[in-house]
Amino acid sequence: MSKPTNSRKQNLTYYFSVEGETEYWYLKWLEGQIKASSTAKHKITIKPEVAKDPVSYVKKLVIQRKTTIWHLSDIEGCAPGNIQAIQNTLSRLKAAKSLGKSIDYKYGYSNLSFDLWMILHKQDCNAELSDVGKYLSYINRAFDKHFDSMKEYKEEDNFKHCLGKLSLEDVPMAVHRAKAIMQRAERDGYRPVQFSGYEYYIHNPSLLIWQPIEKILSDCGII
Image (cartoon, rainbow, N blue to C red; front, side, top):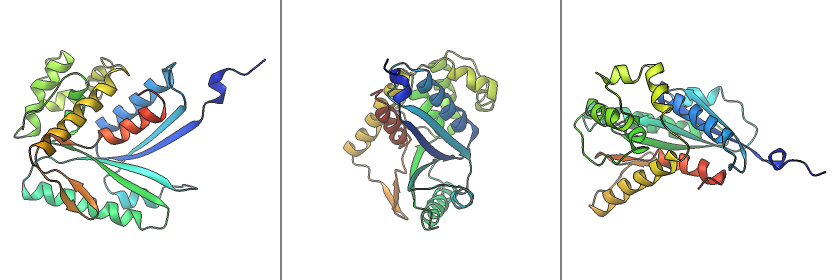
């Protein structure tokens, strides 16, 4: 008797360093959705860690082979302080790659914030917003909520309740909408800023968080 197909599934592991708990909760939610999917071709483990400093994260990471890590962070506007913070992060990403651990450290940002990625699971969000708080009305509409503040929305129970309104089928749609945002930026003549071997768009909306998510979905045969 042949073994069930599931027993022959390859185990795939993905590493993330993230700067906030919402990113962590989302990635573990995605892991659970893929594990529960009857159509996923592989088993999956997503290992996110809340770690703002890539160098400190890599120093304590035990790996046996060449490994790709994605660092997820926000670009919360074009004020000098925000840009300096991003460039500091990119400098630390470059430094982490040179620690001799065969790390390929990639950058998956959201501009203005990770909240944009969440919204894209349910609807388009193409407006250039002046600050992160402006996402609240989009969040409430996308998830049929009435949060009074972004702080309330990001409380663990509330955020996970929003995740509960999503399905795995919503994730490819978020990827599609995110890619359309980036294509529009290029078409409109925006050019990315180059720094420490990485690039990012200073204007919003823009984001690259879709890239690792798309790879996970593609590796698992979901898209």
